[in-house]
Image (tube, rainbow, N blue to C red; front, side, top):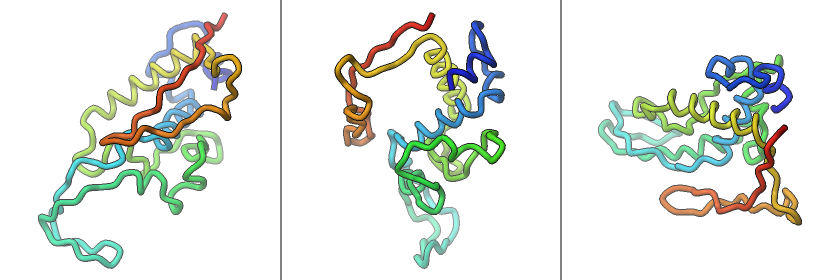
Length: 169
């Protein structure tokens, strides 16, 4: 990711237009969001018509709670659903591919209105951090010792971590 970032951006500030030239970086961001989604359940939706889903009849007007996690970890949608794998979002040529099963901003017509802005901000924030810092566990701690288990509540919050941010030269 850093090598591509240096080739595309160099020392200048990252801009939104750089995103199309950094498909692997974009894939890393999407895979991070897929694997560590913080809101496992979307806001309630109401069916607009009678629906049959997997052999179940759902009457028009029924309130449903979409469980986004079930799609983000669906083995029929993702090659390795429980493993960090940016290639989930890359085609054979290494180009970024949007996936219908990527629902980190909710689903249906009630998808987050700020999704486009959020994606842009996440890209700019993440690439700027990578451009200026190298992140490592603290001395004496290996990457394998980091506990990435979320704190379960209404949302899935990341557990507190100690890390070192070393400024790049």
